[in-house]
Image (cartoon, rainbow, N blue to C red; front, top):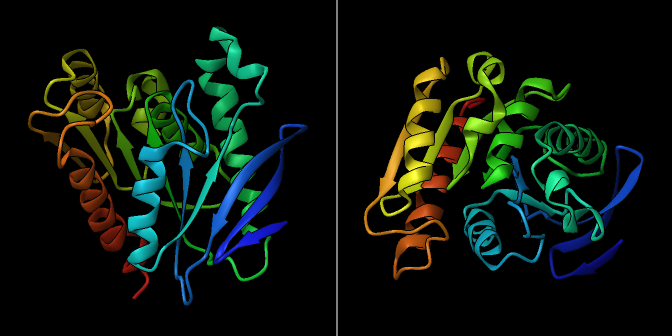
Length: 218
């Protein structure tokens, strides 16, 4: 492991491969959010790093990780293999739960296809997942069984200009039976690149995790 400030570069054994990650544990962190990135993205995604920094500022730990190896990420079929991504995400959660000083309350933050992987992994993980947030997620790809089985309180955040993803999220949202909320960020596109859009995502995610992940045990 290699450390920079309170962030540690880690190698996660999951699914028979070694995955790269960045684990950040602020002092006194009571919960940890594991990030599942979208296609073509990585642990260095500036958008997810921004959201993670906001969660860190609120006292939550984060794990940014690559669910695919670099050569796998070049193959379209593997990028959209939700079952593979979900399996590795669940296994990575088990791995991080065994690390020293890691708080034993876990949430998922998924983007794009990572949103679907987060929902499916939350159903599969032997480690209880307390809350899920999806940013511009293709949560429809999780499948009807996972959507119906999901127990963790789940928030879907979609840009108002991201019309096709918004329609898919509305359909998936109707299939969720857990505590749920769908939030549309006005004027935001799929990548939330517009002024103030990503700040809205970070604020919404922090509020959701503070409510259902951090305070649920208090």
